[in-house]
Amino acid sequence: MNVALAIAGKDLRVLLRDKGALFWACVFPLAFALLFGAIYPHSSSTAKIAIAVHDEERSPQTAALVTGLVGMEVIHTADADARVQRGEAVAALHIARGGALNLAVDPSRGAEGAYVDAALTRALSAGCAVPLTRRNISGTAPRSGFELAFPAAVLWGLIGCAGAFAAASVAERRSGTHLRLRAAPIRMHTLLLGKLIACIVACAADAALLVLIARVAFGVRIERFAALPLAIASCAVCFGGITVLLGVMGRTEQSVGGASWATLLLFAMIGGAMVPLSVMPDWMRVLSSASPVKWGIVALEGATFRGLPIAEVLPACGVLLLFGSVALLSGAVLQRRTA
Image 1 (tube, rainbow, N blue to C red):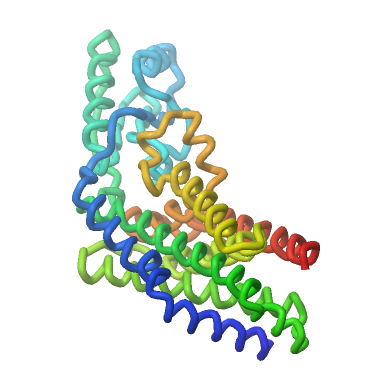
Image 2 (cartoon, helix red, strand yellow; image 1 turned 180 degrees about the vertical axis):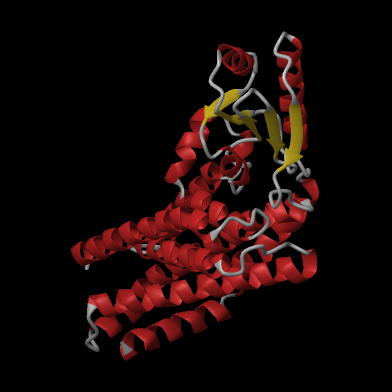
């Protein structure tokens, strides 16, 4: 273990001396947050309209009302409010026994909420005259575009760390450092453990620094302080495992660098780091689940402005840990075969 920690310390010192790697890990995410934080509106696009409906009445009249919500995706569920809080729906429509309606809207998606309200008003005017009350779901409204942009910015920082460590692994093999370490002798699993520890520490420190800057300089809320370390640690472990795999996917810095950035940028594109998930078409929203970037954003949003309970953040953290474990195991197997 002491040897693995020494290797991790060596890799961290190399990273700190690499100005290019520090730019992609720290400066670029801040530039991304500044740019997209200023661009992002306080509400998202109307390209994807979803309403969660909990119908306790289950009468022909209420069924006709739900059918009359033209142009929206209706999600029948008993946890309608939770769907809105997680960002899976724009509004929650509760139909109580007796037919009373209660519409709860995500205030962070004002344009879509207005569309839902208008559609419901049209359906009611078509002959379903029942009482309607309106309310907002608390804890889901970002105060600014920066609250929407910073979770994605943190993931860009982790992508920068992963790319830098993957390239450094190949540089060690090319310069002969890797061969000298093996001749020490140091077992392969010790080398991998040391590099994994270094990447996890760097990713966690980078994410914590970006979150601190977001909180102090941009007023980004942290609604669940207990969930934030869990989200950051899960993201760090995930990208640590991915780094180990990327570092053994080629024998030259150019091949590993190209493969690493192509893979990581693809993750970012489909995971919501470039285009918000709420404006993606249906097929791309399904595909986004294959990207760890999506689950990292979900976990960080849950701990920051969405204020989700830890139980709601745990599934996303579990997916991140699964991604990291599978990537680490694959990298270890591939490393043994190419050693």
